[in-house]
Amino acid sequence: MLDSEEFEENQRGNTEQRRTMIKQWAEYIRTHGDEEWSRQQNKLINSQLQSVNDLAETGDTDPVQFANVRDRLQDPESGT
Image (cartoon, rainbow, N blue to C red; front, side, top):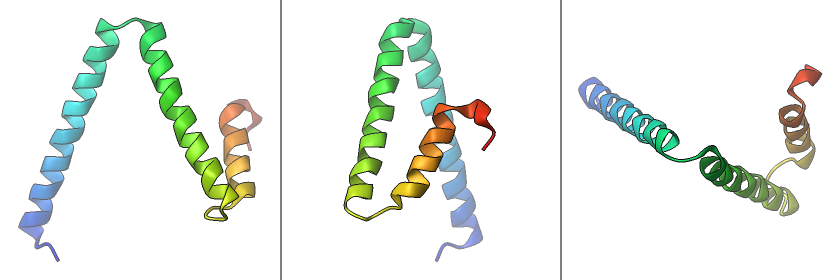
């Protein structure tokens, strides 16, 4: 188990890593066209959805719950 100093150091490291990644992503967006980075984000999201669908097929996740969340994300104005 981590003591408080180790925990705080770990948290600082995680925060710095996140900040670095955010700065890199912001720079990438500034230097690449919308179509390019949008296409890459689309690939990432589609692969995540495919992974969840695969998990649902093998029974490793609840397909009904996944479908409800998916539908809410596709129609955020539904309010459900």
